[in-house]
Image 1 (cartoon, rainbow, N blue to C red):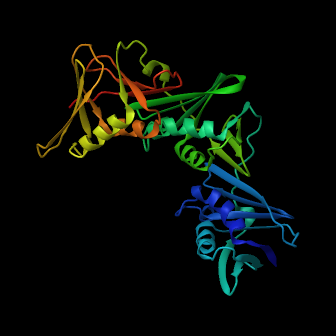
Image 2 (image 1 turned 60 degrees about the horizontal axis):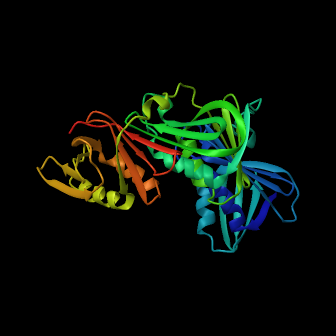
Image 3 (image 1 turned 135 degrees about the horizontal axis):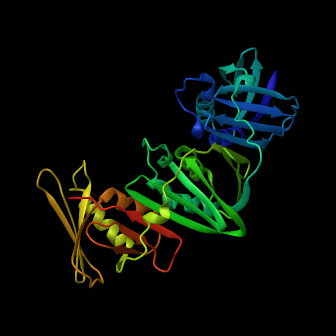
Length: 369
């Protein structure tokens, strides 16, 4: 029975949009598959890892009108479609427990698994909050904080991103316990305060999928899920159940010593110094004195790198250490010409901000060198 007949790209594009969350190895074999739902002229592709689910919807303009569902290996189907020449017409035929993909004189027979066994995420119930923002705004906010998420911390709530809805603002916060990144953006409407923690994988996938245009993304918050709708796609993610640290207590508010510095110059100086940093501890010393910032790195082989930059600074001399990777991370994600670095003492964190803006804060804890 013929399921689909369409241009290769018309199937490959939506398939690539969902396969990013498909795990190569999983305890449930069907999770390596993509669910293909044909409902007359509508084609739905769905992938899930039980925590996240992505759905893409497209229109099929062939002469077939039957409704059919099947699941097939997402990676294999994607690899086959990629290998076909541009403009090739692909046909999917159902044959017992297999599907045959035909394109020109090529034939590929793939195993299928019953669509009824595919573990779609359950409906979440009542919508607690709903708002829309331009995709570019949300993508920019995620980019400014996602690199600060923990990766495999036993404090599981740090392995994600805090999304806060409060008044007419959307706020995003990420921390791994050693540094914290905060950004916010404006909403058209005011909302009651609501906080959810999004899993790391969902944040990275959403950031990858959003476009840099003015098209809107609709966000719906439920008791245990958040649903993002953008373009022809929908991403649903479970929420991490936990108490995120109070970020307002981490961000310093009373620092008096501040320097303004060219972001690219600082980034290049740190990149050069990092070549001779200790590979295990990645420490860098900042020595601030009248009109000067000296940056130095040393390693276990007694090698040393030094950089010096002119800055407007007239406070007390300061000698403080940081993880150089944490500094390079933020400089790679902030696109402004200049940044501001504010200091307390040698045992205090450093606050990095953007001159004239209140919508971004980055805090780095000091380290002993």
